Structure formats: structure tokens, C-alpha cells
Image (cartoon, rainbow, N blue to C red; front, side):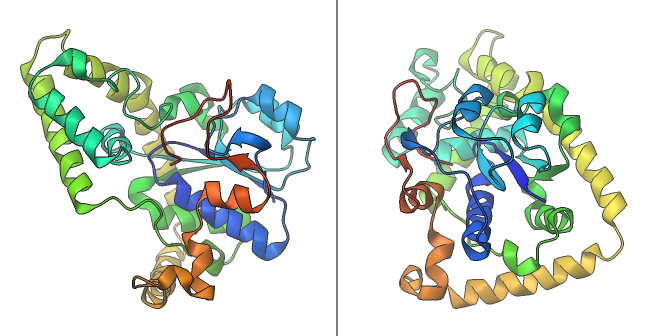
Length: 302
């Protein structure tokens, strides 16, 4: 079957998109390519897709989008629909890790010094795009054919393999957009600040406003029910899944060993595993790395 992956921000979704793009290249399948001049990290609406995609003409769609079940069913009538979710605080910290180090240092300094007006990403929940609940509204979670969790990434991939009938080799990956140790340390400090500030500041503080918008509301409810869906999927899939997970871990270890080192990206077998969404779209003649007028995009593609 075809697949629609509703790509969420700061959840590890770039890695999954790259998996799907490699499948298209290796199997001659049709993946969606952004029109030339449109930023390849843009979040797409159903209206935009109706202008760009003929019904049932794309086998794999793996991009940021706002999921509207009726519109997507018309465009992708035989496709399985999947998405990826992450704990809201971890997602927010991951979003911050995508910022340039100097900007992240400045932002964290503003937060720790208690200057609420100096928190430029408080309302936007970090530099990385819409919330999960804006990509997949809570009421549409039940329409997904597979719910995946960042915290259960490889296990989620095994479930995806079963859903789509792919091989384990089709799902091998190297993680994209690895943060530096310094960025990770700054993001960890942010998490500690957020938890502490929420407990010790007034209701109208920047920390509490960020907590309400970025962690509570539909984000926490969506993640809670995504966890429930995932556990139910595991219960149904239980026979043999641990054996598949072990084999997948072995294949991943072999790939990591073969593609390690500073020159790994230049090795023919490894190069395709380092290609991200922007590069893939450019190689296929579409997209741009600059935001087009009217496009919803972010500082960097995630």
C-alpha cells in the first residue's frame, strides 16, 4: 500500500522521511516533491495539496502537513496514514536544539535571568514550527493507521514494516540533525529551568505561559492518547515482534559500523543515508531552501 506520513516537528521525523525517500528511489515509487520555489520544509494544507497532487498519483507522501482526513482520503484513497509523536517537554527541548548555538545561549540566558519579554519563542514553542496537535488535531488521532512514538523509535519502525510489508533493510537509517554536546547540555538546562520555573513562578509568568501553550492543552492530551494507541498496537502485534526488533538492531549496528568516521558521507553505500529532505527535494528538481511567500516554514527543516 501507499503511505502518508504526517511529519511532525522536532520528533525525529526527518529521519523517517529520509527512510521513505530512499524507498522511493530504490523501488521506483513516486514520492511527493515540493514544487520548485516552495520551501521543502513548509507545512502544507489540504488546499495546497489539491492544487499540486492528482488523486492517487503519489505513492508516498512524507511531509509536514495539517491532517484533514476527508481531504487526504480523496487525494490518497488507498494509503495508510501514520504519524510520529513525542513527549511535549522533550519535543520542546529538541526544537530548541535546532537553533543556532549563539541564539540558544542568548535565549537560555534570558530565561534564567527572569526576563519574560526576552523569550521570543515562548508563544511559538521553540524555533521549530507548529505543535504536534496542529499537525494532527486530537479528534483525528483515531483515523491514523499507525501511531509511532519517538521514545519507541525502532519498535515503531518494526510496526511500520508490518503495516506496509517492507523489509527491515528498507527501514535502516542513520540519525539526521544530531545536536552538538553543547547544544544538548543547553537544552537540558532549559528542561530543568522550565520544570522549576513552573513550580515557583506566578501564573502569568513566561514559563507558565509556555507550559500552558506548549506542554498542556491539546499537546499533553494528544501524547497521552498516542501512547494508549501505541500500546494497543503492540498488544495486537506481539507475536514475534521481539525477534524482529533484535534482527533490526543487528542490521542497524552493521550499518553504523560501516558508515562511521569523518569520511563516511563520501562512501557510495553510505552517502544516501546522510541526505536530508531539503537535499532530496533539490536533487529531484523541487523545493527551495528559502521560504516562499505565504509558505508556513521554520528556521531549519526538522
